[in-house]
Image (cartoon, rainbow, N blue to C red):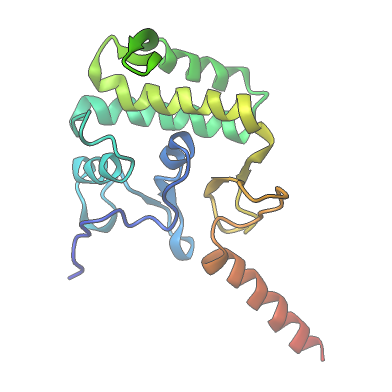
Length: 189
């Protein structure tokens, strides 16, 4: 029996929130895996709790059924929008998630500020992920990338200086590609 993880078991974490949400589905060794659907012996809500913790949202939002349903809605919308930015239906789905929150201008001790507000707090994480996608599009749309590995479905934000990152992780997908090329070269000889 395998132990239930107490930390996020995904191979790629720490991406901007929108991509991190999309990356809650991945394919280790070609097997479709979903953090929100019982991966690694976790219940759906335990997977949600791990995701909220790994993104730093656990102090603001609860891991409950409503939050999970809204996150699944946002994940599907974002996955479609990232896969095909010209998909009008995907844009409508992202906009539908964004309908559940807004930014309120505030005045803080440090000066002007902003605060996110939600019509229902359970929409908070989903709305924040959709809002983050808009921020990524506004600042670096061309740097939202899918891993170059044919078997990988993960996405990342390319923050490399020259913008040429190809792999979700050099340690995993990048090394597999290098090993495959090496094997092909040695077989040719």
